[in-house]
Image 1 (cartoon, rainbow, N blue to C red):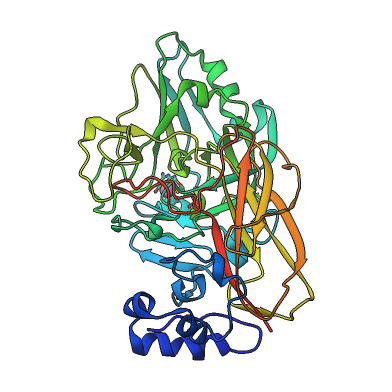
Image 2 (image 1 turned 90 degrees about the vertical axis):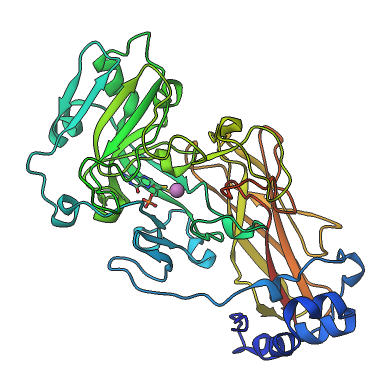
Length: 431
Ligand SMILES: Nc1nc2c(c(=O)[nH]1)N[C@H]1C(S)=C(S)[C@@H](COP(=O)(O)O)O[C@H]1N2
Ligand SMILES: [Mo]
């Protein structure tokens, strides 16, 4: 299948890319000179002199997107249907607060029947383990007896960007859309833990959800992860019952879920039933082995890494997206091109945002808004004209307050394909 690139004029780029398909994309790029490349792109390349050899132009790198319907969702791209996993096309992440219908879905097992029926009968949340006073709370008690907060918080699957790794890592091939920033309402996990009385021996908090394992084997968790006690006590770690002002949808963990912002979203347990305060690192399903872990040291792509050399992923790296315009757009030459997107970092605030339209030789500083609250993503905008007709790429790079910056190339290959925060780039044709 040849790449389809949405553009304002109904597919001019698409037609030109047929040339690439006939020649074979890879061999074409190896043997083809710049003139041939420009032919394939259907436009001259004003900054060709700055285009690193071997870099596949973004316009050729895109694949057709299969958009499918999930009830309550719009425009998501299905990555797997059993379990259900779906990502958001990047242009649908253009809002400051991600509407629920556009939030990605990542399930490891089945949606619990209770959630599908909206049946609270017999539901409660237990907090036990290394606490002086174990708690069993109804949803009502949680809602009424603690301070509640509403915050915009980024959830990002640690596998977001996995599709960028070579050799490929198995698992859902997320491109850019395994992320969202919706508004959650709930209580601070800290307030409940304090009431339960965390013992000195507490090290970790593991969650147990109600979702059946894919095999439906009784007593087998689909996933049961957790966070160290310090993250559990963090001011921003929440137990949420509402998303964007509505009760949590069945797909997103009704009636109650954890939100551990800035960390792999796999720590944000859905369909909660129990929080188990542990005296050791939690060892539930997908906490051990290679799951959500990276090598403790850099490895060459394709290396097999022993389990004992893998470390649990905590803060997710700084990242950004260009949510407007769509890749493949045409824009009139010398007319202002308005760009915008979102930037976030698991380490806290993003402090600078830059874009380049000459393959990284020079950078334009973007306007960057403050986050609505800690761990909300930040809107950035930039405006400039493109100087000549031809093919351009816009590259976007965020820097956070720790000085961490997005890499141009896919960073640190790791066996499971986590934490790809390479710069997002889009193809633009000035006409
Ligand atoms: N109980 C439970 N919690 C879960 C999961 C799950 O399958 N079961 N998936 C986790 C993973 S891997 C991710 S990325 C997020 C996805 O949250 P979302 O579906 O609301 O986007 O939920 C996490 N919490
Ligand atoms: Mo995930």
